[in-house]
Amino acid sequence: MYVEIHPVLAEAWYMADVSREVTSASAHLITTSSICDPALVMWSRQVPQTLINDDGLAKLGPQSERASLALYVCTAEEAARHVRAGSLGAHVRRVRDLAGAALTLVVFGVNDYFKSCGRKTMNSSRKLIGELDLELAITDLLVTTDCDTVLVNSSSELALLIVQHTKAIAEAPYKMSKRAYDEQSELYLRGENRKCVTVDKQGNGVSRLWQQMIAVLPHSSLETSRALCAKYPTPLDLYESLNSPDSVNELANIGVSRTAVPGSKARRIGPEFARKLHTLFTVTDGDILLD
Image (tube, rainbow, N blue to C red; front, side):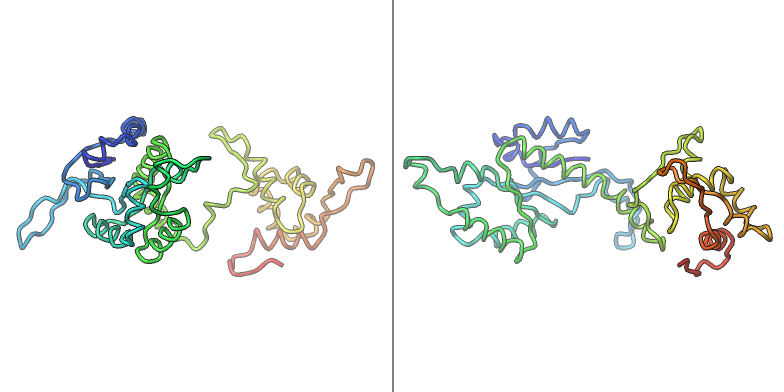
């Protein structure tokens, strides 16, 4: 992944940490004067060359492609001048059109710009806008140009922001392909990670997983799953047993001990839960609902 910035931006003092952080993230920082605006941060990646049709002639396609997102970095003083003149939206739209990418405005040094002190100073009289003016301008920018704004106050925050965008853009193709694959399924369970059981390559945890599968069923409990798994160590054992003629009665008569009540009598699983298990394991119609 390549992070492209203009040489003018690379020499800015607030970009001092960017090179180190980008390199530590296994990306490459490139300074190029071909960027249309000196304040832009853009990304590109290498892609396999393919044959394309150019007016009936076959030629190789480009070796790299630009990302569809860019950052526009400016100081709070620069942003304040545009806000005061009412030209922030028009300026961002112009840069966005030149870059040909979705733009995120990054305003650096907002806290220092609005820092107040107990006495009047020469710098305090230079404040062009107030905090409310900036907030209104950011809201207007989001509504009129669909441009997000991020406020940063240190060079380390700016470097971290660029690295975060670099990682997100680098992982975007993989995540988009994974999402496209997931959307082909009628049932999505990738995000369902509650009550999971770890099973290693040696098979450790399979019995606990089988017990958990029974315990999460409606009207089941941990005691019920323990009693069932003790009699049927695997799902195949239970399936083969349920195919016998008197399987429901046999399953209903399995005793379940009440572990929380010492000395109490064992209760049965019962015919209702046994019938539901029989339906769950033997039905061939996937549209049947279990009450």
